[in-house]
Length: 331
Image 1 (cartoon, rainbow, N blue to C red):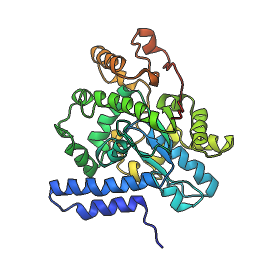
Image 2 (spheres, rainbow, N blue to C red):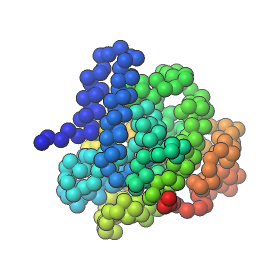
Image 3 (cartoon, rainbow, N blue to C red):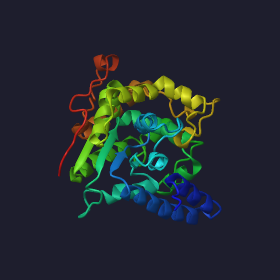
């Protein structure tokens, strides 16, 4: 029996509906892609949930390399769901999803702690968090320059005020209640609560993955019940280094999925763009940065351990994130 990959199924859905009127196209894609997303969730034990621009692609590239070197898989293979499993049956399936926007939101709604019977409680779930102010700026660039027209249409369909990429202002986007900083804070707070109903959960911060990559990647794979040696972990970290990933993207070695829209004439179309901690402070003046910091301080759960100290010393010094780097809970 021939198994169609999740990626191919998605392409079939998008291509077969592209000539339909917009309203019908959006509704049908939401339904069919939502079913595909739930199918992906049902077939795997291991979830990686993260808002776009939280380091999801970097993490899945390193995880892919762990299996790539062990089973001699193609260098261009980067997991999203079943890519590794279909290449070698010894590899597990994964679900990598934002569980929030468009059809991917069906997983988030199914796991919502406010439901009397939330689904997927027996899965092992990693929530990949990042400082929401940094996400907000990178998400703006992703939405304007990188997101596919099909995905943008689906996201816009659920917004009260759809966003026109040709006219969208960066600050207005960042302050947007539905896609900007307020929504990002709500996303993190909601998932903190949802994880309390999951038997095995772990919060991993992008900043810890950036500053302590080897230890954090090792902890993630141990949490996923996968045994890799320090040598294998080190090789995956080297492969996933910022410099190597930029080179692989620009040379088109990595050219599928999130890497496929890169244009050499526009650096901001690169998937591997900046990866800077506290980078949002370079994008706005002091008053706007202070407003963003206050919003995080007032609204974001302290569980994530993000310091909102905006003193001069904090801005000039290294990032400090008090509290645990990860959390595992049992319900």
